[in-house]
Length: 366
Image 1 (cartoon, rainbow, N blue to C red):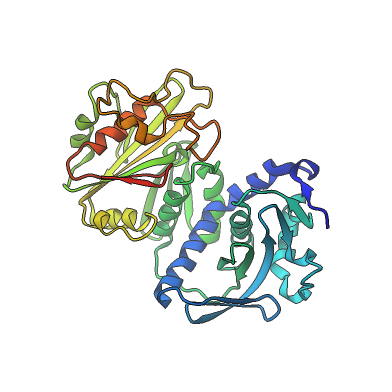
Image 2: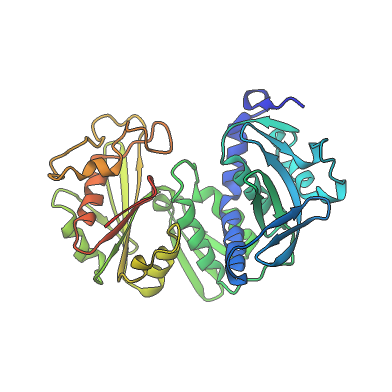
C-alpha cells in the first residue's frame, strides 16, 4: 500500500491539525487521568500488547484495548487498513469511528515523518470517542484504552487547568483555548461564560477564570523560587524598563511583535502541581515556595526584538543559554523569542536559589 502525502489529501495537514486542536484540551484531560491511574498502579514493568485479543498489559494490569494504527517513522497506517495483520473488524471499532472526522482519517496510509502524529491521532480518539487513554507500544503501535476502566477523584476544573498548562508547554502546537474549551466544557459538564478575551468556567460552586489571551501563549519558563513572593513584589526584580499591565491573575507586557504573560503563585498546591508537571520527578522544585511562569508569543516577522548572543541586560552572557533565534535549537522553524522576554528569564535566573526550567529546550538552570 502506497502512503499518500498530505498534499494529496483533501484539506491536507492544516485540516487534520485543526480537528486535533479542537479536541486537544479534552484529550489532555483524559490522558492525564490515564497517566495518574498508571502511576497509582505502581512502577513501570514489563508491557505486553495483543491487537487480536484486544488487550494491553501495563504495570501488572490488563486493559481492554484496540489498536488504532501504527507508525514506522515514515508513514501512518490505520489498523483497519493493515492487510499484513488483518485485525478483525470488531477489534478496530475505534479506528473506524474516527473516519467520520475528515479525509485524513479515511486515508488508509499517510506519508509523514512527523513523530507527533501517533500522539495526535491518539488524542483525536480521546476527544471524539469514549476511550479513556492511549498507549504507544514499541514507539510505533497506538492502542486506545476502552471505556469503563479508569477512575478519577480530581475536580473537572482542576483537570482543565492542568490540561491548559500542559498544552501551553508545547511550542510547536497551535493550540487555541477559545476553540478547544467548548469541546472540553461540554464533555465534562462545565458551564462556560465570557467573551473573546476572558471566560469563567463553572462546575457546581467552583469557578475557574481563564484569560484566553494568556492561555494561547506558549510557556517559555517555569521558575521555582525559594522564598514566598507575591507578583507586585516580584516585578521590580525583573527590570525597570519593563512595563507590565497587572491584572488579578497575572501581568501582561508587550511590544512591537511580541507579548508576554507572567504569573506568580506562592500557594502550596499550585507549586506542587507545577513541580509535578516537570519532566521526571524534580525534588528540588518541590522544596521551593513560589512558582513563576513566563508565557510568550512573538510575531514570526519580528526583526528587532530577537535575542543576541549577548545583550545589555546580560553582562554574563546568559542569553546564549536561552536559545537566541536562529540557533537551530528551537523546536519550530521560524519561532522567535523577543529580547525583553529573555531578559525576564535571565532576571529570574539571577534570583538566589532559583531553579529555572526552559520549556523550549527542556533544560534546567539553577
